Image (cartoon, rainbow, N blue to C red; front, top):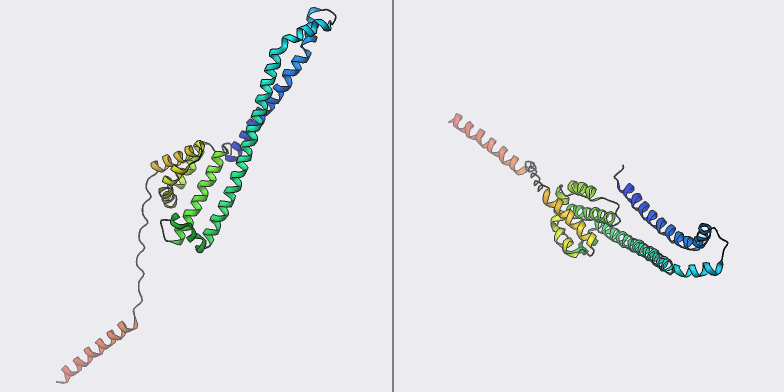
Length: 243
């Protein structure tokens, strides 16, 4: 799919590679032009090479050397920034993988789930597991959003489906205030605002209809009372007829 996460991730990686390639070519091109420029001047003048004169001309290239140093510094800076971002993304993925493992342990064992304290607003075990699963879904969206592997339109689309359901709606109702306050980066704050905007637009899910009460089986003592009543009525009729 053209607009899918994989395509967006490849497109983002292609843009970064193109930027690095352009910076590398620029850093190589500038000193190349500086080196061959005296030869071009000789060809333009149609004279034999006078290296003393060319050395005097070369002193006028101080500005070009300064520009070269600036571009080299920019290339090194851009490379360090990209490396720092990749390292940060790797650390975040490791931490989120650990968080996912903790969530799965809590989903499988009620003992571990009780260790999360007031994380849940429901005492129902199934609702608690569903709450934790939706939390894992939202964290997965956040990781893709920070890696620029999902667009805002795509995020709004999938969030409108999940948050429109009763489980997703209850999850964001419980977690929205905590997430809006605890966001640490500008991009994470933007992510939380997008989900909150979608949450405000979806209709409140209707409460499920109560199940009809199960029909209780007739108890043995009720049947015994009914038999006794029938016997008494027959005995009364028999006495009345005999009198």
